[in-house]
Image (tube, rainbow, N blue to C red):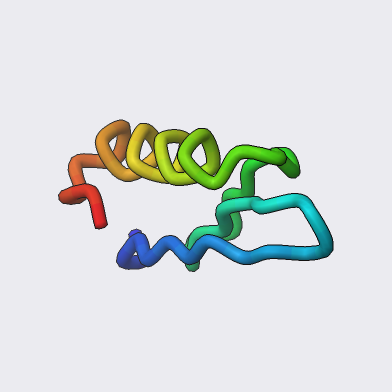
Length: 50
């Protein structure tokens, strides 16, 4: 299983989270929501939140 590394990216007024495993979140206007979704993804795979 690959190590999970998430990144928050911005494109215009939208933010989204991506992970090194190929997972990605929908585009959000809220950075906090994108970060929470990334943390939830990490927690679901036993990794520590960033």
